[in-house]
Image (tube, rainbow, N blue to C red; front, top):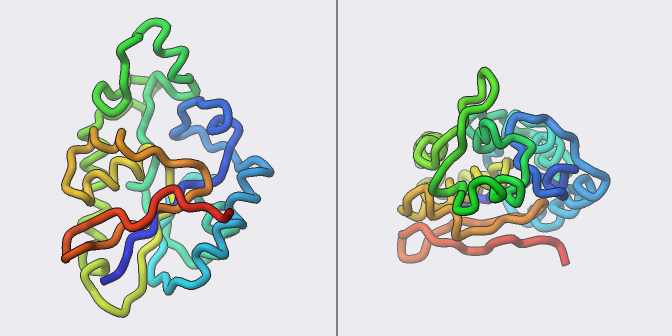
Length: 199
């Protein structure tokens, strides 16, 4: 069976500072570009039959620098819409909402066009992606599927692939420029590798 390669984009200024970044289209930092290039050797030994990429420039650039130059843009791979918390750090949110937790509480509405998302809404997007990929993941010989996107969304997608609620994405931290691999064990979805980077 094919494996699902989850790739978080390289570092941006806001990922380095811990600011929530969804629709703000920041470029990779120099370090982020280096991280993306370092993905190449990790992926070189794999046959990738399909690559889907978030519309954001940071994800597209990561795919290109990693050598995944033939990709399709998939809008459902967008990061969690952080609503009013776009650009805000968790430590700052906790000053007024000390118990707030993204994976259970979601976010308040933001500016027009960015109403924010609940964990269940992000989970529904992840389910759409997984439904699209199901035939490919079940097939033999078509190669692996690579998804290049964002930390929180890919964490939710991982939870959903494993049959867990969207909120269980909290269990999987995901670093910039890292790879996670979802495969199977005894025909059941399983984590094969996580947060892999070039040494």
